[in-house]
Image (cartoon, rainbow, N blue to C red; front, side, top):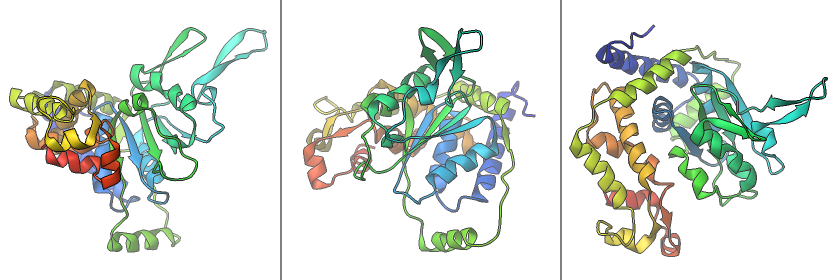
Length: 321
């Protein structure tokens, strides 16, 4: 068990534990190193993650594999057009004594896989808003606390596909990270095909316990940050806001509106976690840049000109580093 009474020893143990966790996930997931690192970073930062990619890129398998390596309760919710809010949070039912009793929904678990979250209408998507922000669920005026820790790891198909609904901005803002999965390389795809077309079966071992995750989250909050890193993060977010003094010509040309203060908070928390994972005791500007795209890309709304000219959010972010 990790000794969290000594912050330095705990930080060293965290880096080793995360390497062990990545190795265990790598037994099943081939490639996607940046996405795996991003999901782990969001978990130890106590944040939620959104994974976007076309079908078949192992988004669901990735989340399930990570959940198997973490010794915590896990529920999968398959989002469909006919899914109702009560199917997520639960509902009140009449028991044998003819009294109303709250029947908990699948959201009551440590890790929630919200699979294909954008295949259900916004009304149902909104059922997760309170759970993601407040870590509670309110039904018929009664508040129920969710277990700790609590993460939503959601997968999403590109919104250009049939049968998808765009996530509301308020819903998107609840996600700490937005990660885009790309196609595997030729060599990775060869390895994937070999592994999935044979009789080989792999078991994923439990690497990190529930108490260790909570300890890691508390440790991330304690990491010291220098003023110049705070200033860099806040300046970076301010540069995404069109029409403001720090906005670049590219931002003014292509952005409708930029990121809010929550982005600055997540940049710092993400930088702290990224530093710890890489064996550092305090983040620098490179750690902020390492998480900038994942934090900012879904908090910047591009205008029609950007859409027409094919200017991506990532390209704009790169221009303001």
